[in-house]
Image (cartoon, rainbow, N blue to C red; front, side):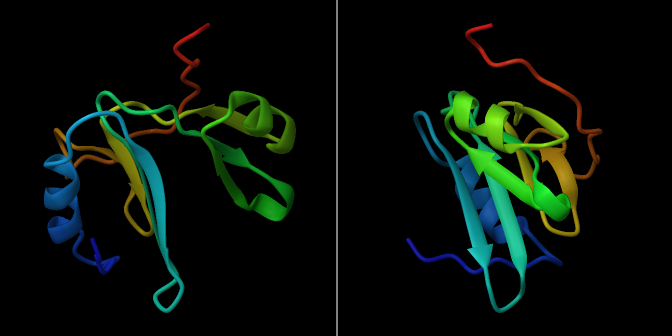
Length: 109
């Protein structure tokens, strides 16, 4: 599947992701637009994230990697949520509402 990321209107790709079945989590980056989209479905594979050197965003499906490489914060992207450049953290249920990032412990803790 090829999907263009539009940092102004995420409706097309958000609708596509809502239709995905099974466990997933992934990161898409559009280098031309410098736009980022990260998601973890309701039955998703964990997606850990945090801040690295110079405020860079780091993502990993491995807690050990995320917890050792993230300098100031790490947590699990909440299931059923996504992060989009210029839009912040949002849920599939209420994409018009910006969520406040907070620590979410991994499922096995």
